[in-house]
Length: 546
Image (cartoon, rainbow, N blue to C red; front, side, top):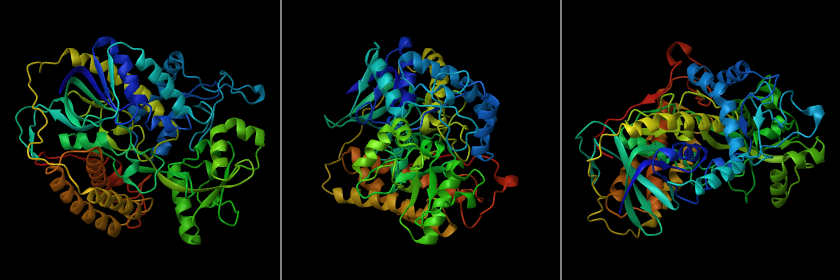
């Protein structure tokens, strides 16, 4: 089946949906999402959107906080642009119907705003707009409602993108033949319900597929976060950058029945204290900001405490605060905690670090363009230069909003300039492929990748661990390639293929950076090296085979 659209958006988080709404008046839009439209990393974002709102805050302060968190690798032009345009993009969300929490306590209200602003690790002022403790879900709700009421937008749920299609490549049994300049013109997409592959042609293709947390054994991310956009862009020949910088959120719930349950950084922002198994606060040993230090420092501190003590977890304690305040500020966390047998108004919460946010991704410019023509990457799929070596809390939703806006403006012009109207794209080639009965191979490889990435490429790394991880991923990649081209594609196979690609990119980037900076810490090079490594780690691919 062939589908033609002016704009193809792969992903349905805040970046993809915002982009779709902004271009809808200028052409047809097709949104591809592999689960229900609301199942995205955005919907799980608890903290909020960081943007200057109060009279005591300033762009200069927000810029400096972002630069400090990024540990020398932020692109200053990007930081300036995102921070200064943030309030305008937030106002657009409010106009769309997003209901951020208001402050009803005049004594604690920030001057110049009626919103209840939170403060999270690394921020010098309160500037995080939130909707109680489920900000992402509220934003997603408003955007999805607009999407469903906007003419010209086609939403394909339960569809998973397989590969991008470019004018320079023709794929058959894994071989790539170069024919023309590298211009993206759509994607092959698996309709999971019909078990058929669709060819979608588009003047502009936007990767807004979210993050890669499922590459790791323990993660705060939902099951959809398998790095699809990064993997597809890499296979098509796009450059990626800073893949070694995986942010491990320091406070995920440690409980046998909990899955992907994040304890928001805003809890520490409101006064919660990290304690060891003896009930002793420990962050003052690691950073002057104590519990409000940036995530990389807090995660490493917890990792050190656990390895030193042999304990299974540390504890996050906000029981010293007024119970009524805790319930009002964190109603969802409080209710969910009761389901797992603890009351956060009385009990310390057992927590451990978990893979959370990818600061690297597809390398883009200030408009979200990759180095493949007519291919954009926005949101967590992209490496824009905003985050550098470590993301400042709640800057991710802000980045998604600003880059969706910039990308939309540029993409409208790209669509008008499209010249490849006569191109006949090849249909998906599955000649000779058969249905597989070897599901165990997929499960075994999936589990092995996630486990050795956690053990060897986690919070603390070493040359020996990275070398072991590279050997394993190369062997697994070989198995996947053979399997992939002999059997009909399934959603599980597509995701396995993608996490294997992303895992290899993380490993190779980590091996390349010979220093410790931000989220990347190796015991073999424990110090920063500004003389040689005050730059991005960029990987470029030669198109030979996939």
